[in-house]
Structure formats: structure tokens, C-alpha cells
Image (cartoon, rainbow, N blue to C red; front, side):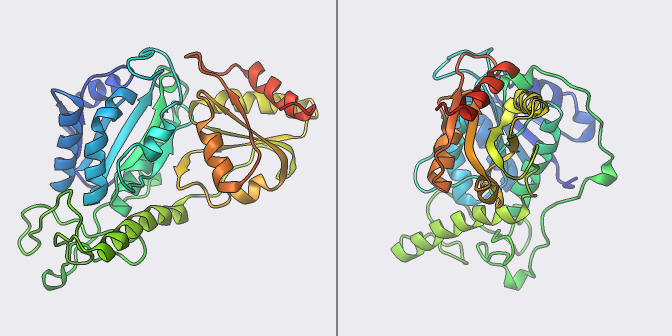
Length: 361
């Protein structure tokens, strides 16, 4: 849908290797896949492909993201559209390679040196992985930024009926038109998205250089000026915040006001949805929302939270989204945490909600 050639630079790692295996079968569609010698080379190739005008992707799991971190910071500084897919597994270190977990959210949000904000998305179901991959690519190209897409081992090894979308139903996106040659400035930004121009390397009249050293606003020249550095840091952050204008309203499962709101993200969707529906049938005052955009957060989330007495956040970690919500919305939310390499059971969600309804913490 982008009209751009697709590049995947990857290094095999459980449970993300299937992405490389499957895309490698698509040469007839012009897909280019590169099995690199290591994780750093894989993400480096994706950055180079984006510099050359490709829709660039790198896939991995948590340990691989740790190795890619410095290069992801380079993508932030150069403002190149690279999608980083992290199929999360149990950690840290080698951890539980074949088991699921949601413990890489902080890594995606904060795991780089300096002020380096990155949009973070998460798929909710196996079928939703397609839609969120499309969304990650769309945001990356429109806003000229690297984007994290989080899934997990549970989704990677799961399946569900999925209606293949009609191509006509998907909105096209692509590299915006370049300004006239005489008006080209590398960091002259689009007023709506704050994205810089994306000229393909070697295009006559649009010659430019990129790198990890701070650049001067507008011109793109190397700059050590302190005021310029602060301006560029704030511009990069403001650009990511602008993405909130593209996030659709959250869908609430249940009433808009009540006693308990369950907030989920990622592969907890199925257990949360089933558990909340069971409780609603039993007459309990409980609703749910599932977040697919984790940075920036949906603009209407704060107002939704305000309509409920208590908030429960089930996660397959020690409460990473919980801490983000507490910090941003100053809400005394309660975590429901499981770190066993296994997904939630519906009964565990029901028990967590019942504990809040009866006054437990």
C-alpha cells in the first residue's frame, strides 16, 4: 500500500524467525530479505534500506532488541522510517525462548540513550498483527520515525480465523512529494506531521548526508549549538506526540462509567474480553478497553479512566503499563501480574476483577 519496495533485515531468533522465513518466500512480490550475521547488522541494513527509499523492517525478540539499541537511536536521530518488530518472550537474557511474556514494554519506550522517543504499537490477536503491521508502517512513513511493533510468543504461535482484507479497503500511504529542488532543506518540516523530507539517495538536486551527530534545524548541517540541540530534541518529541492526532477513539467493552475498568494491551486481549463478558453477564459493573497505541497513548484514555472507581491492569510482567498509567494519569490503578511464561486464564481475570469489586487490592 506504500508503493515502496519492502526490505527485511533480520537475524534468526525464537519466536520471531517465522517472519523472516515467510517473507523470504515473497521474492516474486519484490520483497527483499536479508539474513544478517548478527542483530546489529540486521538493523543496520534496515536503516540503510530506509536511507535508500525502502519500506524497512527488522524483526527480533527481546535479546535482539538489546543488541539493536544503539542503531535504533541512530534511526531516531536521522529520522528514518524503520519498523522494529519485537516478538516478546520470557527474559531477561536468554530467559524462556519458547514462552510468552510482555516484559519488553519499558525496553521499547525507554531503552535508548538520550532523549529518544519512539512510537510503540502492540497487536492484540493473531489476526490483528496484520492491521498493526500496516499501522506501524503507515506511521513510520508519514511521520518519518522508527516505530516499535510489539507482539509476543502467545500471538506468534497462535491462530484464529482471519478475513483477508480487500486492498481497496486499505488506505494508501507513501513517501510525500519533495519540494522543488531550490527549496529543499533536509530538516524543513511538514507543518502537519513535523516530518522532514525523504529524498532517495542519489536523486539529483537532493544530495544530503545523515548521521548520528546532532544536526542544525532546517539545514541539516552538523551543529554543537546548545540552543539548537534543545530545539531538535523537543522537535523530535513533539513529532511523536503529534501521532496522537491519528489514533482512533478507543472502543469500550461495556458501559462508559462503572465500578471497574480493565485496561489491557497485547496478547491479553482474549482472556480479558472473555472474562469481562462473563462478569457482565453475571451483572457485575465492569468494562474494558484494549490499548494498541502505547506511545503516544490514545487521547481519550484519560477521560475514559475518569468514569470508573477502580482500574485493573492485567499484564504478563511486573506492572510496566501500570506504572506508565499511574505516572501519566495519577490514577491509583491496580496491577494483575503473571510472569510464568504462560498467558492469562479467563478465570484469573475474573478473580482479579472480583477482588476489586469486593474491596481487595
